[in-house]
Image (cartoon, rainbow, N blue to C red; front, top):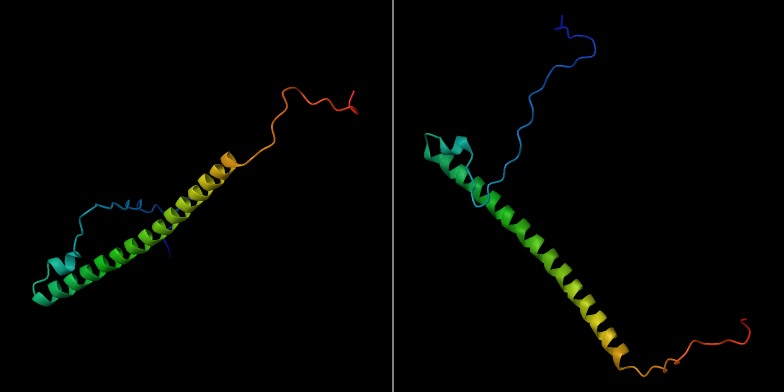
Length: 106
């Protein structure tokens, strides 16, 4: 028979460990590092190199999206500046010196 628990209680699970990213440091898997043969080290090194290459590829994709967003923002700012410059140079009607007095409005 299975172990009994109190009504309404659940077995406690250990709390998950937080993910800690250390910039600039990559640790090889412990099995490859502590292997007694050279094959484990070679396989572990290949796995580490593959993980690093994948991370570099993801970083390249991030930079591509960032560059596209930056170019779009700069284009928008350039359009706004151009339109504001065109408004500044436009010939506009002179504004009246006093408030407008419409005859239909009392």
